[in-house]
Length: 373
Image (tube, rainbow, N blue to C red):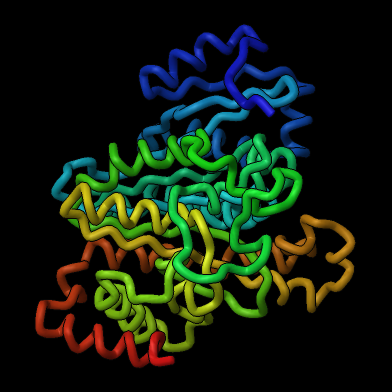
């Protein structure tokens, strides 16, 4: 289906101008439309409230506007802090899979808490002088609106990059080109990446790869009993080039929070996949910049929610998102510490990034921990 921007409201020309000039223009919506969006994609309205509520700290851009069934669904990027290329940077992304809206909600819950603190806590406000924070809370707005894993073209954005797995992938789940009617469809061969991924790539080139170190956290929910922190590769089982840095970050996290809940490991330990966008962006960073680029994925274990409330199996959304109010609130709180940790780790990277000699030791340790079979 076509998800290109079309003239459907009087505000469309302003939104086009915002995209062209990389500005934010508040969409003009009727009361009825706001009520509709509150039901279908409340995360979009939440994002816009944060943009309006904290103009002192948030520089928002309308990266693109999708038109879907008479509704304008923008992709926003929000930038906080110091844009000096000498500063470290952090990128938080969510909503790559529209069904997994809890990832977007965790990001927005963290961002709201952070901005509230910055408005009264001098230490938090001062922290913004030391780092650039970029947030893309909804990468796939049409998917969230539709409540589908894929985007408006029925393409799985995290199976869409031009990368082929080097070994067998899970049938269907590892990415396929059989039909867009089947989940995890990669798109047609030799096509450009989907517009959402192109936008993410442009943000990474514009604001991430020109900084000395960039930590990325992409938030998802999936089938499992435990929360995982994954890092590339997804397309092969061999260690990533800077595996020592990923292991150093794991040790730092576990020393700092010894009772933390996450399993931290390469994604390839679980399965291989075609077209993983973070494999693609890691390779892009490796070939085009001197940036220490470290993409991580937080995969929240949704089976745990289903185990406690089997009635969630009645709806597709219930398989990937907590449905009971107190559990939903608990999930929104649970991960805030890790997002704060990512900021601190980026700012203080010189205290934990390994030197050359230590890197060799960590490489061997990583092979023993994750690649010994």
